[in-house]
Length: 298
Image (tube, rainbow, N blue to C red):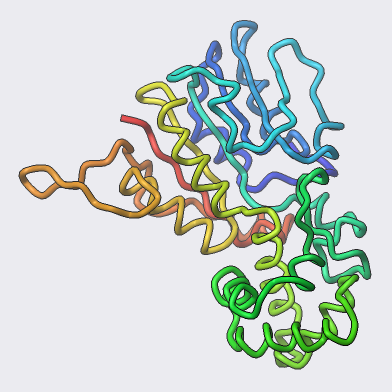
């Protein structure tokens, strides 16, 4: 099952990992184009229920007309506002950015288009990429490019941005591309740009903190013996998810029993994450970095 709005990665594997009960209550934390939600609804009977979240107004336009379905226009870090403790039989979250967001030029997520430097997943948020570039300090910009974009020369890049903005403020994606051009060999320029745009997007949307908040909340929302299924697309997200499922907390603090065994509220499904096949990557190149991790709440 696909949608022109966004092609879900590892769709069959994700639905299988949820181990859906026909009369269960499930959460699609990142609704987007509704690909995962539609597949979940196909597995539910008349007693089943699906609650989806998405902060993007564009995604709300994809709402599904089904009595078993509810779409909440809010960030997935607000689960306890809408859900009771131990009320859910499974949670799926497809992290990162949707194809629709990338392919909508005016959103400013892609370096392929000359567009305003926006990058907000929620258009009602105040912080934009242009504000970050035009107002953040040197240390703050360095963090974005070193920790979030994971590129070298972060200090020089940050200083260049400050030098450029003193002459002309950053307004469009082309302004940023021009400033970044000296810092990458031509053969790797697209990858370099993708990393830099990713770093800015993470900052604008506070993605890592939101993810950490969401993960912590899943423990109280899920019923015992039920599943958390997470799709991530870059090492920063995946590291947080992996740590959380291993230790039960986002800080990676290990608690051990008398015999030295790690105490965690999660049972991992599989020793390694599930990744797309070569066939799926050929059909949907944007899924190539996807990693699927599954935990069962003890």
